[in-house]
Figure 1 (tube, one colour):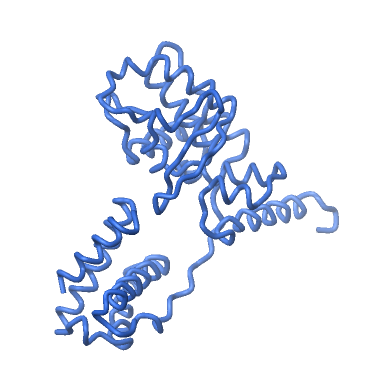
Figure 2 (cartoon, helix red, strand yellow; figure 1 turned 30 degrees about the horizontal axis):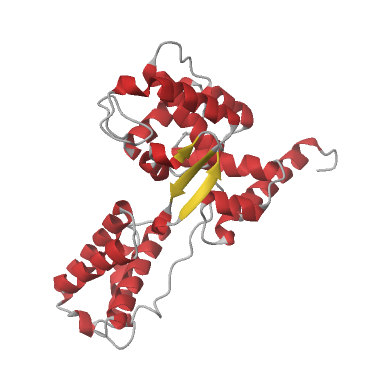
Length: 290
């Protein structure tokens, strides 16, 4: 059983080019499923729909619907892999029903809130100069925090005002960088050597290494608190703000999809729903007969 799991994990990492974070999530899901099978005394080849449904029933109450859906998806992918390598003839997880996810509209900042967030006093402070460049680039280009952390100097073309990103599934895309972000990046790159770089990543920590996603999240949260924004400001909130403001400004939904790196347009369409919610809110507050 363990060998099959490891083969699947290698497949995700080597053939599917999944990120380390995604592979780790798959591994955790599979280990939970394996522990259930061991407890039930079931071998992989003995697993059927009833077995998987019995496992899924143990997840409710301890996991959100989204987590349950992800775990089912992991099991489904695992058994598809076993069919592909001819270990099994059919995928027993195909008929397992997934729970309905609660639909939450993305949290985003207003334009004024974004301006307050990035309004950092950078005078003679390398960390503040770096942090402003981080915030400006995240909002300017809608990057995922992992994409920002992984971006190198070679990915950034200041002359053409673009950044090359490798997103989910190692898919590459090129995104414009706005003038304010370029200005902030230019100031940061001028003092980047003060961090004594040991890495070619664009953004460095105080030891000169590439900055981590966790550190980036802490930085963004800190400036959200400092600027007095009541919302919980995270890297994803800046990404949502980027998309929402583009849509409000008349950007084409397909173009936003490309910039965000969404594989499906339906993922991007939630920003349309968000805009409709905002229109209804304005209508209710201002129309005499609302």
